[in-house]
Image (cartoon, rainbow, N blue to C red; front, side, top):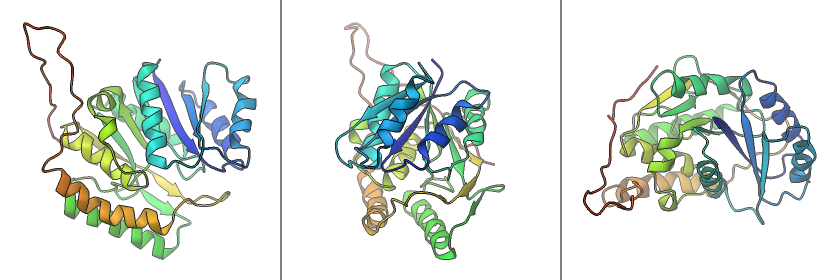
Length: 265
């Protein structure tokens, strides 16, 4: 099994069927895992009704209550690792991420040497459509602030359109990822970078949702601001690498850390 797209949902009935058809309409064979946090609008039922149309390609995990973006992705990462997928994607349900860009992210990891490919709004060729100027300024300012505090050379650290090689997710101790909002996106990239994985930013055009409601709120913004400071402080004491049990008493486990070289466009 090669590629799985994880889509967390909460009240996305206006978008979920359309986004699934768009993904399954691509020439590349993508599977999709929807993780629904008990949407009262019936999002999960729409997915269930589509599973017979896309057998072996569309999967659903239902959780009780709105448990947060970060915990949804962690759940999905562990599920995907257990199912032996080689490439794992993060993607929103609301078409802010264009499904046609999935093959470009995949190609960056499959053929261009990246361990982690980021759909980036803030490199040459990228951009944002239909956002108010204040929201753009907040996002760009947050990205600059994150780079200054963490020293992580990623121009769009809060991006939520991502492709991971399975080796990245297997190396990270996912139980040590603490943030649940948009700071989760920063922490995952930070963990991969600290472990020496190669990161490439791929330019995308991000378009604000036209249907459904945004999940952004003040608590998420606060978590992002304070979380970056906490991330930097904790990095002096915290190791994100998953410990590997030594099953051979004659030899000790070897951790292969890849070059910290960054691929940029």
